[in-house]
Length: 162
Image 1 (cartoon, rainbow, N blue to C red):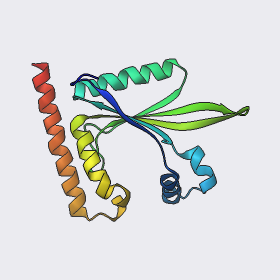
Image 2: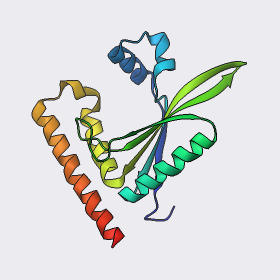
Image 3: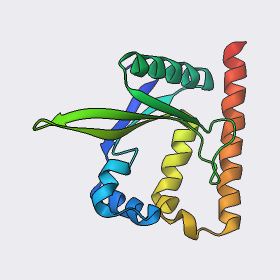
């Protein structure tokens, strides 16, 4: 892939430890967690700028819906989450058949900028699984850093438009 192109950064199957942690957090019986988790399979699309995030989300959403898949979109670009995370998430209910039994697998595509991807990767290592235990001052710092990067994304977008 040439430098400067948007890219699918990674894909993953959610590890059993994460499914178990999610089941506990959501008060789901472990036997139901596989059916209820919306992100058992995940993809990450990293875009160079905000315009490309919007275009990627629009094209993926339209294509998935054309295929008859149930898709929901969550946009946290303009206003990040309480930790400052910013991305567009497309959640897909993906039907599969195993031994004549039809199941639905929750899949999620995360679409974010290169700056937000870097922020997320840096903070995820230390903080992601401990979010509920974070001091308010640390949450504010995380959000402030994300806001600075969002401003940088917007400036880069302005430069691109000119």
